[in-house]
Length: 123
Image (cartoon, rainbow, N blue to C red; front, side, top):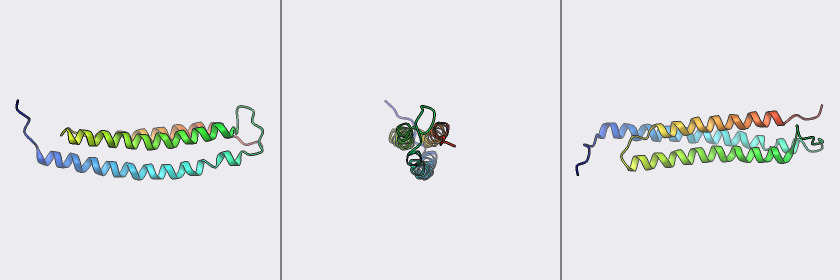
């Protein structure tokens, strides 16, 4: 059995680009986690507002905030793990951290849309 010839310059470029994208993704994830920490205060602001199923349900707001934390953390670790596995198998993998960043951003904004729709304090 023969193996494909190793292409060191392209392999180094793939590894460098993947690590750079993973670090950028981690920084973006930390910023999103900081904003999620601020959004976790929505349930506290809703204290005293009667819950009628359409606004200010503290339990729902807390669950969606925890879901937002999970999406951001899971997306980064999963794509970085897949990147490491592909690099160890000597396959192209620079695009996986990029996919992780896209998944983090989409998941984060999905959580923001859900939170903004359910947070309506009484007037």
